[in-house]
Length: 57
Image (cartoon, helix red, strand yellow):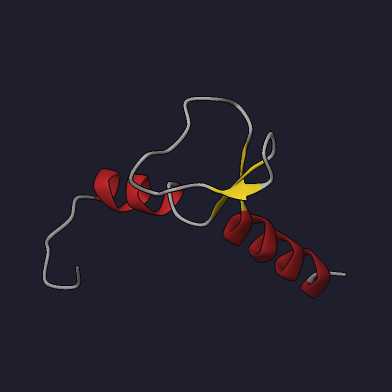
């Protein structure tokens, strides 16, 4: 992974498919087979948002 030269689009696309929770089934999503629905929640983005929000309070 570290030896690959990824474009910015590939890098962002890779990280948008990792650590997702499907809110319909409350199970983690397989990064190789992401759902085509509106219901995945990006857990890492939520944690980062809460940490930054608390930091600015």
